[in-house]
Amino acid sequence: MRKFKHLIFDERDLFKDLLLSDTCKKKNGTINLSEISRQMGRGINTIKREINRFKNIQDYNPYQAQKDYKKKRKKCIKKLPEFTKEQLDFIKIRFNKYHDTPEQLIYRYFLEFGVKFPACVKTVYKWICLGEFGLKKENLPHHGKKYKTKGKLDNRGQLTNFKSIWNIENKVSNV
Image 1 (cartoon, rainbow, N blue to C red):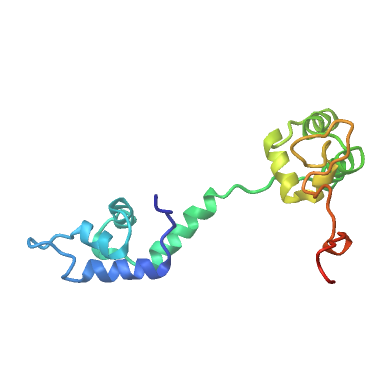
Image 2 (cartoon, rainbow, N blue to C red):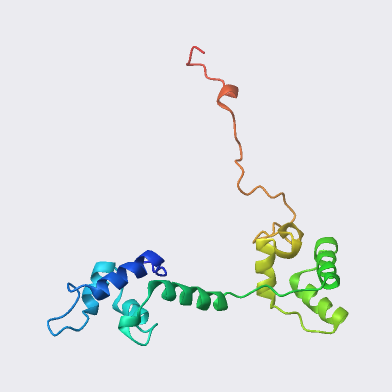
């Protein structure tokens, strides 16, 4: 399966050249979408979507298309909610000092400020992993680890019964 990426400006410029060239036209003079998609290495639906950005094919402009793409892309990206300084301090203290879980943090936020927390529990966990708002992963109940070891030392990722080469007595060698 191919990995799909957004069109960049150079590809849009190539697309404009292919639209105007005679090599990508059928015998009756219409545009051959399959030939354009083959030369660009993109799917036919991608080519159709680019054509539909403008009402008329002759009006296609790569600069305008890129500008339109960036404008639409900017609207899609979700922004972090804006907290007041008081709310942010409350979140940091409850999580970093008192080690509340994200579930407890959301409930206590509701009790303190009387408004619903602007994100779900899963999103708060994502913020913790990314380090947003000064929330540290080490302050989670199991320090951000997936599994908790019960009553024994945590030696995952460490070698057991390890001996150095220099400590082994080897009677055969002359060293």
